[in-house]
Image 1 (cartoon, rainbow, N blue to C red):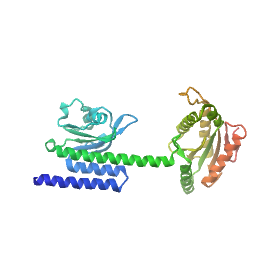
Image 2 (cartoon, helix red, strand yellow; image 1 turned 180 degrees about the horizontal axis):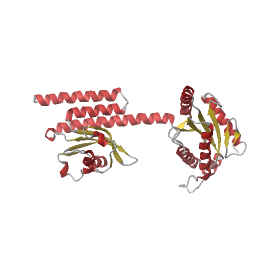
Image 3 (cartoon, rainbow, N blue to C red; image 1 turned 120 degrees about the vertical axis):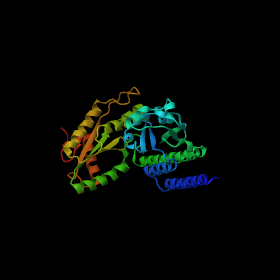
Image 4 (spheres, rainbow, N blue to C red; image 1 turned 90 degrees about the horizontal axis):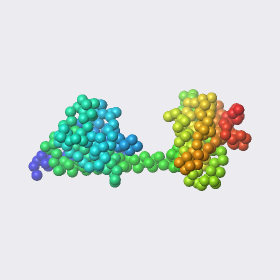
Length: 347
């Protein structure tokens, strides 16, 4: 073995060690991938290198990490899965080495036109997880005369590490989501409600903000379960959860409190502004038809209660209790209406 080959081996071992250390010492995906991309650049010395992640919902690739002279221009660029060499690799899950891109019909010239960059060669490797491609690592303008089978094996190994890091991070994210979200509706659960309320009370007390809670209980929901079964009932709850979320701002929160009860938290919102939201929710329920895919066209109404911090209550449990009491006031009188703490049922 020549000295150069021996030095290369030592460099490879060092990189494997650093990447393995990053994988085992952190769950922060960004820092792990940053380490992997830096080590890859140190070894291959490309002009540009990037990590493209697959956005499965939109069937597109976006540049999660881009390093080099063209990196700024790539931040907002998206490729369709199948477009360009990276898109082809994402679609087919196979590694591609192209020494001269102008001889390859898959090459997407528009990226070079946008970045004012000249791509001569591309090496693209898929980040695979079982049967799915999670992303693509792309090295641009590597010195191809140095790209031997050994380099190819090393690159594949590093990409496998990156795929493991992404899978691990997503698994952890999923576990965290499950602990605070409701399986049926995708909204936050009651456990997360009280944690969020504690934070909101602290923040509002400190900065002199108001916030309002809307407690929502569906009217006659039991009849849906009794008539159509629990599967339809679950589908109905899911659709109503979606409707509630669609009526809110980005800073608002929606929770499934339990059964057919929902809670909406409106930060930095006084009672009058919150009533506009509550009326909008009530009117949306009145005019919506649910479970249409099942051919049912169900119409569901709700009893709602509204309470505002700090005027009606000053602790998380007390604010929920006040909103709940106002909801029951409606439930025991007219239903399909809104009860307001300190004001009574809406006329």
